[in-house]
Length: 370
Ligand code: IPM
Ligand code: MG
Image 1 (cartoon, protein in one colour):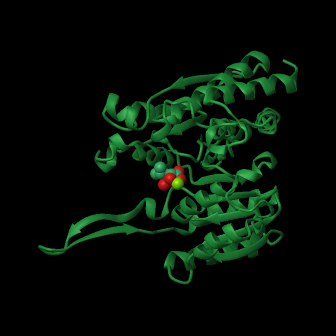
Image 2 (cartoon, rainbow, N blue to C red; image 1 turned 90 degrees about the vertical axis):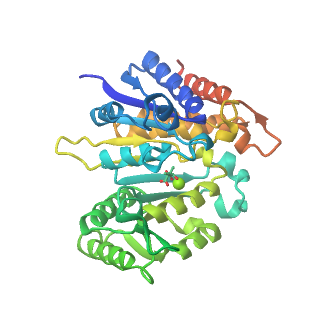
Image 3 (cartoon, rainbow, N blue to C red; image 1 turned 135 degrees about the horizontal axis):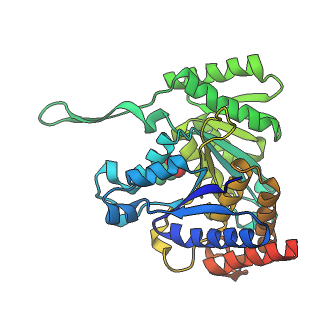
């Protein structure tokens, strides 16, 4: 069997530092567990704009289309703030999502016991929390047409973004949510603004119909997006799977992230449709951004990136055992009290990005005896 092809796109800011730690883990896996990947590394984001004139070149995009999975760091930074929108660092991310048709974005928010104290919420509210946000990623207001700014008269301009969804776009993400709920606690909360928006009512009806026809065994709730934001802070453990659109998913997943103590802990997977051969396009990235303020200082938390790689092993390559192994190593490192600065409460041993990455490998060695 040929090696799986991974395209590595570290990007900007802390993207490079956290990706470096994953590459070390891949190296360890290939030496000790005879897993090898064909890895190619390319520029993306502002760094690509500076060196190649665009935030993602056609060549890199082509490689992404030909790879089995993409591992993405983070993009963006203040130095590219004034770059035209089509070439901004974020445009690369949106292009990858769209052209790879990565419609299903999985954002798990899990509170590790060892970290429950670093959540800004009370321990009893977050302890044991394990929710999964399923965000639609290739449509909605991020991509809807028309969009743009036009002149109304000499003194007035008008800016337009369009929220739009088709039946099939809503159905396919809904199926993912119901399918994944069946593997968890079997409960889906579908989130929209059906009290105000056409797309909200449309979304709600499609979810209800699919539930009625094919997924009656799954518990379904509908919730308005503003209420969901509030409930996530008031009583997050009422949720299992949250199903929502592109924009609400962007907002709600940041709230969910913070419940876990730090954005630096959240991995994500973005998946395309399953093809007849059983494969699907996929990209894995930490939810945190490029954090330009701490870039290059060894302060970044590499755990979200490492766990994104663990998600890749599980969802793209069905290497569930190795994926679990990495998650277990991450938990042990946290139990040992090691903390990067974002998850430290002041009493722990604060370690650098590289020390944290190395500690994960040390745990992997301990667990496997290699
Ligand atoms: C995310 C990010 C992106 C988004 C930005 C960087 C374009 O916030 O992945 O959540 O809005 O989708
Ligand atoms: Mg976001």
